[in-house]
Image 1 (tube, one colour):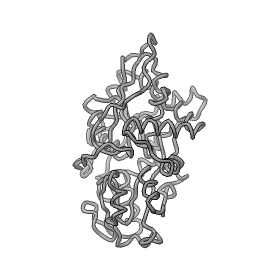
Image 2 (cartoon, rainbow, N blue to C red):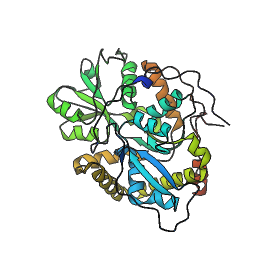
Image 3 (cartoon, rainbow, N blue to C red):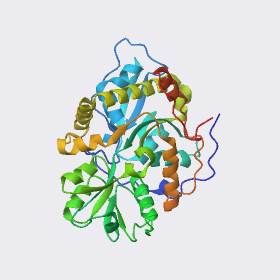
Image 4 (cartoon, helix red, strand yellow):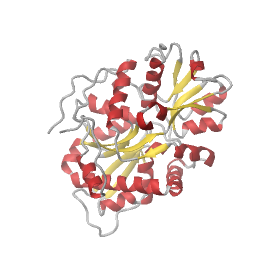
Length: 368
C-alpha cells in the first residue's frame, strides 16, 4: 500500500540553508566523503539482487551502529558478495539530497531531516526502516554563569543548526518554561545561537556563548573545557528514550532490492547486539573509524562519557519521532505534517522475529 500523500509540507526547514561545515572528529559539516577503509565483500561470495549497496552516515558517535558495523565488517558479512559502498555526510540535508539523487540507497540520519525529506517529497522519497540510537544529547553550561535551569533566561545558548533536531528540542523546552523566543532569529528570553559543532567549544571558551544544547561528543568536549551538564534530554522523555538516529531507505531501492535492505537491517541488528555486549571494544572500534575519517581520534575524557550516554537499539521509537514533529510545529518551525507512511518496519520485524525478539511498533505511521 502506498503512503498517504501529506496534506502539508515543511514551511521553514525545507528552506534552511545548510552551513558548509568541515569534516572533524565530531562529524559535522556538509560534504560527502568516502568513508575510508572497510571490510570488502568476500571473494566468490554470492551476491544478492544488487551488486552493491550505497550507504550513508555521519562520522558521529550517535551514528555508532554504522561506524562500528562498517569498521568491523558485521554489515558486509550479511551482504555476502553484494559490496557496501559507504559515504559519510556531516549534515542531514546533504544526505537527503544524496538519497534523492540515488547517490546513496540507505542512510543513518536524525529525525528532523527524515521528516523534512519525507514531507518535502510529498511522501515519495524515503521510508524509515529501523532505529539505531537514542540519547546522547545534553545541555551543558558555564557553571560560573548558570547555577540552575532558571538562570538560562537572558543567556546565550548554542544549538547545532537552525531547525535541526536539537534546535527543535531546545525551542520546545523554552516554550514549556513559558519563555518566548522568535524561532527564526533566536532572539527572546533566551538567545538561541545557531553554531556549528566544530566551533561551539571555542565559542564556549571565548565566552561568546554561555552553554549549548548539543549531541555527543560535543557535549563531552564542552565538559572537558569546564562546562557542566545541567540537563540530559533523555530525562525529558518517557522511559528516558527518544530517537536520535534512524535508518532510512529510498523507496525505489526498497521496492527493487528488498533482500539487500533486509540484509543491511540484519547487519544493523547484529551490530547493535555486539555493541551492547562489548561496549569497550565497540567504543574503540567507533573511535578507530573516526580516526580514519578525520585523522584524529577522540581522547578518553571525551569519548568515555559520550559513549555511555548513547543507547544503541533497533526500535525506531516511532512515537517519539511523532512527538518531535509536534514540537517543531509548536515551536513555529514546521507546519502540521502528515507522516502516515513514513515507516515501513516489516523488513525489520522479519529480522527481529528470526532472532526470537519482539516486533517494534510504527505508532500508526506505517505503510499499512
